[in-house]
Image 1 (tube, rainbow, N blue to C red):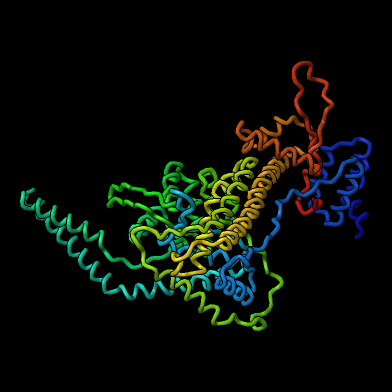
Image 2 (spheres, rainbow, N blue to C red):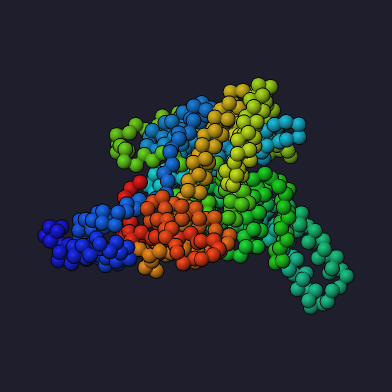
Length: 557
């Protein structure tokens, strides 16, 4: 059946003819809503005829923006990291931008609390990094995760095997003391609080407190899924340092759920993680368990996430307004899907390159933890380069607001951290013997600039995407209330949208309305004769095409 015959069969052609003289937008909207039985070709034909009949343009699809994917400056990496990243990226057929950030995080994990960067006078910057790598499914995130962190997993297993007899002895001692305390408490229940029993209990509790402080625990370098309480416990048992390493973003699912529940509890729980970025001390009072006091807790994050998780993070005001997301170095590697070769057609990475990476990580993990971190000094040339970059950032900050301001506000400190990590990656256990060079500082600045570009794109898209989402929401409300083709005041449209009618959302609503006008869903309507006094309200004619049954019929911008 031809398109013309199909239109006649559904009486569409006669209805369109009746609209030519009346210019009835509401009838056009009804026609589009009832076009479910038409074929795709007939429906598109109807849209084209109505567009010419009514003298209005078809709408443009409202879509989220797509980022431009910059490449991580791998040439800024020290030799061992450069070779490892390039060869593994080739073997795994993934972008080097997916491997470089985890490598920096792995070095950061090993060096955490062992080194810090002495930037100037009393300003010391720790070397722990928080990184997020955003990638689609099937991007081989797990393969990248496993190969980078393999030496860390191996070192942890080896260390726990070495400590096994000491751990067993420590646990036996603690269990014996706890058993002794329980016996005394039961005896006191039977005999009353006799002075000798009270003294004996006090002695046991003092001995137990000392034993808990000196207890030997299994080494836990990293965790995956953790809440604030287990996070604190892990810190207290692991010399106040821990890493969150995950290839599936489990931690952020938990945090997102946490911060969407009770606001007060969420703020308290999130503070636990925020403190560990800069090593701020914290004390947690527990009713049913012993209190936890942390003097200088630090953490490293390296998590692979998908775009949907990233959207939730950026939309959560608990994360953005408290600077949680701003602490992360976030990047989106270029996708290799669709261009990859069969594994049998790709040469394996040289074994000696992987062994050099494993040896470097092990040498840093083997560095003993001192009472205070070893301060890494800047050379005079590095100090000058850092100073110049500081003023560049300050100048940019004059013209930035919102989330990007939070990111840029931390960028200088993060750059110093990256410089420290690159220095440690170059020299390993001998990092404290030399100053951070100009070359290392310039490399750190190059990496920081890469992350700045990522942040510019990311937070710019976040704002644009939110406008697009608001516009799509308004459009869905107009469609659900069968308001396509009608004439409405701006306030009437706003009050039909429950999520955007509050005064606090007025600016968001107006920005979304502007986007709908730009995309031909709304047309300004000025033919108002019945408002005799006062300010005339802003009126809109809602396009009949707002009733289109499926967004696939919208034109691409």
